[in-house]
Length: 112
Length: 113
Image (tube, rainbow over all chains, first blue to last red; front, side, top):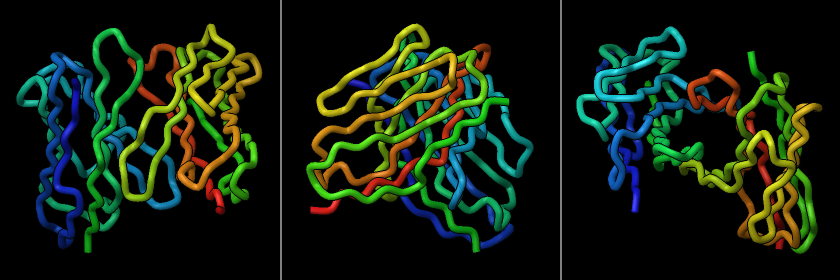
């Protein structure tokens, strides 16, 4: 069966520090992968999506970047975090032949 | 630009009550609509997916309806239980969106024993 792993679960980082969040999917190949952010009082906002290795589309201008070095690995990064980067980050995947999205357990990021 | 609104923002009901959560969207050109459940500090769990050509979907005590022309969906929960307490999110997949979802802000449901 397919599973999605996201880590870490929580992260506290100082302003200006780098960030790397990792997401991996098991049990499927060539999934579409997504990074969403959920800020307090706001809905989920799509940050990046990827339809294949090395193919990244950015939805909103921001301080973050994403990479997909392997088929089932999706990484969210920043060189210098801002206070406004705080939020709950969710990775999701969609397999071939389905329109359902499956989400990871999320990372709560606090930038202080 | 697609916008999704969920009403009410929060709802508190006694156990056993039937309830309805509402979702509306501005652009009726959608592929599908999905309802998710989110427990505090957790990821989202897919509950129901309704294709644009469908009127409703059912899973156990949950029933979701879709009126595409009016831009509305409802999630009906029968015989609510304390374990149903969570945030319920509505999301639409719009035409030409490359399978991207637009989410509402959710309805926080509390079912009191």
